[in-house]
Length: 289
Image 1 (cartoon, helix red, strand yellow):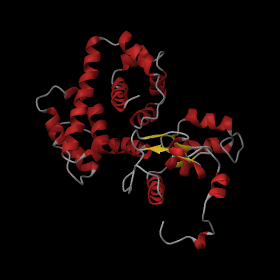
Image 2 (cartoon, helix red, strand yellow; image 1 turned 90 degrees about the horizontal axis):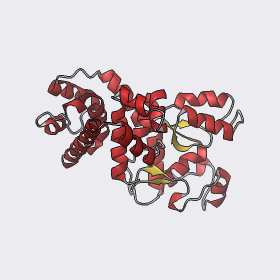
Image 3 (cartoon, one colour; image 1 turned 30 degrees about the horizontal axis):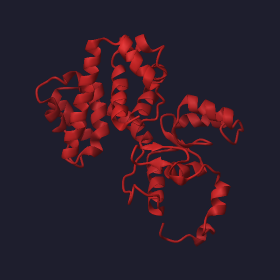
Image 4 (cartoon, one colour; image 1 turned 180 degrees about the horizontal axis):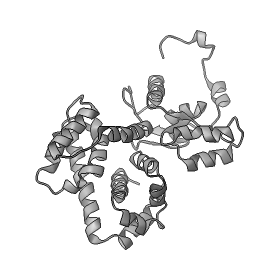
């Protein structure tokens, strides 16, 4: 799936959340929409982070068969408007606020898309080094809305917790020691959790059930660990070596973690340890990464 199609599908899927009649109509057809109905928060997080498995062909078919021309035109308007917003944010070197812009627009302002100078007015609410709380105040003042900062913060915490953050990387195009350290720091800062066998997936109940069936041991992903895993719902999860794998398999061009990519074959911790060229106790570790 190309980045453009993926972005469009993401925005269409999120837009569906605003129309309960549409959800009811196609709920039995598209598995992604079923998940949205059952687990709305985690599903939205998954959509925003590109980790939800959606049958693209069935989604397109269901849209064509069950959504009116007027609704489809509205979805197209939403997609086109958000594209313009992101372009203007980029021109102002404010692309770091794209996620906030999408959340605010899709859930609060999409019905204002046809207003004169909407994109310009919306983008004017964003300032460099601005806090999310100040952003919400600016949007409420500009559009006479009543967005609750606490609710917005909860959504952003979930989305950011699942977001793959490469801030501060020295070279996204190669795999190197400094960026591995930064990757681990960012994972910690974003509250990634532990699930046996994980390598950066977003944690859902279905994922926990699958891992428990694959690794049923109580010291793995089954038994008590299955229940413990629910504390990480909506966040990315890894195990010890999975944290290293998630970095090795991450592809900055598409923002996805793909098993076996970048010449790093799937293997266990012992295999990696046996292949390192320099090793030792913690006390012998150099001061520099």
